[in-house]
Length: 547
Image 1 (cartoon, rainbow, N blue to C red):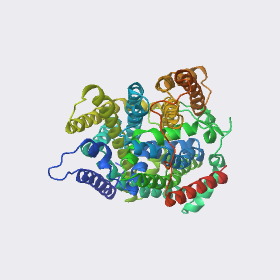
Image 2 (image 1 turned 135 degrees about the vertical axis):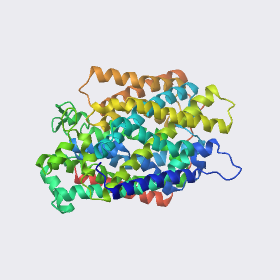
Image 3 (image 1 turned 90 degrees about the horizontal axis):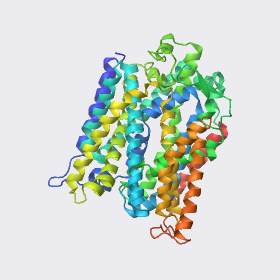
Image 4 (image 1 turned 180 degrees about the horizontal axis):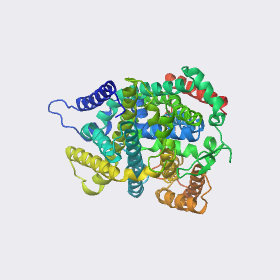
């Protein structure tokens, strides 16, 4: 047991606060029965600050705290591209996609596909998303969260997985999105405060008492880890099996700025149910867009919380500053230093009290993401599968019940599969690569669906159906191709096919369900424009400094 009594008090207090708050905000007024809009869209009453906080709490999870710190240990600051480009992506989504979604009053992303295309496209993508959320997202977050419990508290992996799943289930299954979103506001406070505390202590250790000197020493000790654009052969990183691989395979040079990284970012922030669902639950379009701006500013801060600690851990290991630290970084079975053990090991350095706060921050990130993913899984299954094929006449109460059962089943499946991820060195890259099997198709059908009126339903179905097969074929035929570049190639192939099919089938005419994006649909407030300009300026400056 590595937590002192004070740490445990802080951590247990956090757990009680979140569960209590989740149950409190889930209460309904006397005589009101929770309906589908209450459960799946938080009664469409979220203000901008709750939207932004929930976006970040849903996004920042164990895959960032542990996975991205692990990638910081292995790859360096270059992994921050996912965070800094996300800030710009949020602006793109807020301007060009949110107005369309909110105008149509949809509940789910497959619901948009039904409105724009047909039932076949909606059902195909709903099945793909359900599989992705359960077998990749929920599973990986449970595994990484359990890894932290195992490293810090020596809790066996299986019990840690079960404990985290139960924690997230207690309030999220009962309260739905309302419970998830409002508890996320509190979670973000713990996430940022605890994360910054860990960064400060790690830098203080490297800098012999000075965090600022520690930051300077990082650039001196591992200068290669502060390069944002990696060249082929520039950096060799652990492969998790005792060998090495080229870091270029994970972050292929300029492709992160002009290639596949845009596909993965837009697919995640613009067409991903457990992200867009927060914006769909906003009071208005203006509130949703302001929430996106707030989330964008927080994304710019994230590398300081989730990447810099990983680089600090590398310096500590390389210089042998702490023998116990180095031993804790090693896999207990193979004895190999594992990148993903960097953040949990760093937590052990924190003083009493702060350790409990930082552990609460990590748990907040894990639990909020688990709750969000499970809620979105239940939303898609209930609204796009159950209601369509099994319960066309289901009452509002029945839909809520099905949603709760679906979330519980998703947790059970993910908990069974999660231990199998123990062989990975960088779970963050695992998540990105296998999410990338579906991302090119998702991006293609949404992009053409919104911006090209001639896109037909059959063309979209081909794009949806071929994304995974094409990705798999390229992976095995061209294994040395970076997965981000593979995503770009698959997208271009799908785009060409969709254009040809649409032109042949539609004979040059607009599709009957095409979207009219003329007029003032993309207009934004003055406050949004100012925030967007500042975010763009900061992002450009960061790339110039660390090029």
